[in-house]
Image (cartoon, rainbow, N blue to C red; front, side):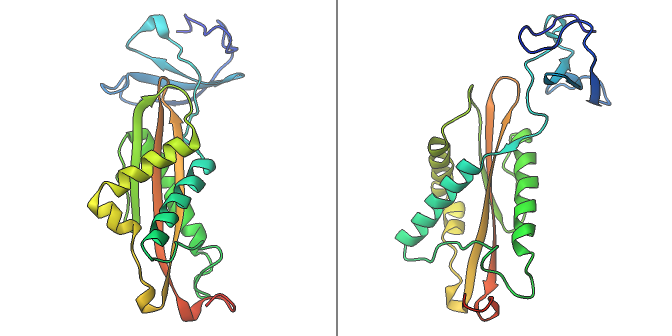
Amino acid sequence: MFLTPITGHGLQKGSEVTVIKTNANGASSTNDMLSEIRYSGGTAYIWANDLSKTYIEPRWSEPRERKDISDALMNLVNGYRMQNGIRKYENPYVYYDVNNPGLGDILKSNGVRVAKRCCMEGTANHEGGQIGTGIYGRYTSPANASEIAQELFNNWKGSPQHNANMLYDHSAYEWVDVAVMTVVEWYDGSRYQYCAIMSMSVVEGPNLPEGLQ
């Protein structure tokens, strides 16, 4: 099956490879991928729809987090909240209920898991306590962090429901709004996909660690 090596990527005819996973049902109608392989130079995919391109350019086997975009997007959201007279979303690793010190880890792990799935599926379907959005199929090279953050923010601001979620305010109940932002990037072989998930919760003010009430 190894017919067409990719010049410059270290994958040559006869290269030793490890099969990471295969499509159990053969080539699918959506991506025609038969197998994912790992070799000395990275990861590649074997396709069934065009044997002249048995190998495609190596890509990440999973989406990777772009913390620079996550930070830029959170700054935009918090700036927007403060412009509307609302306290910014606090960091759940700093503001947490003493009875639930692991809140930050829960929000973070859920955000990463959902963002990776959404990025690969090309949909922003998310779970309760989250808002999501994505940019799919437009970028052929990694995008500038501020550019992507602004576009993701504009997506939320332009949706009445997502805009309301960004402006949640529970301070009247003596609660502190906390959130973790996760933006992931995935190269699908031809385009860079981006997905943002903001995982939100509240912390009861009187139960904050001493000095943070």
